[in-house]
Image (cartoon, rainbow, N blue to C red; front, side, top):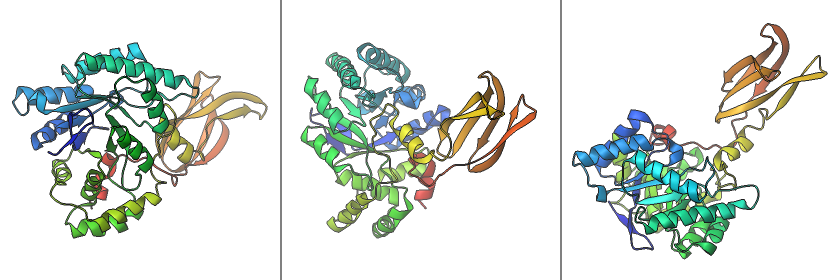
Length: 381
């Protein structure tokens, strides 16, 4: 496995095994298989809710002499769904170590930049980073970094950081290259690590497929190889052994200048990929704003068209899947429905008196965030 030399002279594998959306026994088995095949960078996060299953896999592989601990590069990320700061960072780190069953981490990242509507994110990032620096000095973390940080987040962090971040895990792919951000990272000795590298957009296949055919490779292999040649580290996830092997077979060929230029041109159409919005739940908020506007954010229903008596809010589950509950006086369940496209819905008062009939349609034509794991079979056809 090829390594990348970081600005602190440490090494990180150029290709890592991603675990987002892998859970339970399936996650454990996938990580064990990946390690057996030669993957050494295992990437996870508190928010993925699978650290415990990955820890079981790591423990199994070490105890059965499949790999030595020092040969692995274990990375996890501080949860962005909870308030962060100095004390919470220390607490979250210890809990991650316990779940992963390791005595140190090879890298620890701030998952999202503590983004807030006011300016408090600057202080939160500062406090969080101070805790990570302390853990680094104690030898509990070999490398500290960030994830999904934009230029202005990095600029603020670098003003107070005593130890500069060496990693920034980003949404990077042939169609979402973030050139200015990548250049900024390189200027400051921060290594970009790409997630969502594999392109799933149909419109891009007309460019990628001829290149893949020329090299007798798949489109995912071309995407991963492109990331390497742009100087990114790349992550790839799958629970299929054949795909694990395929993802690893990217070090024995190169893309020529003409092919790189053609793939570079795909960056002119990034609309189907998620930028890094300045919000705590960046991806979810972006998807909701761009794909769910034709649903309803909040609706007040009125009895006899005069007295408001309950509200409706949608609960986000997936781009095309919503679960909606209607309550009377905020405590009585009136109606519940799941739907994927459009459906006529009858609401009932007290469960038996027809009150209102509504028709909804979800607009699924807007930008989408589609994890590679869900579509890998399609894009490898």
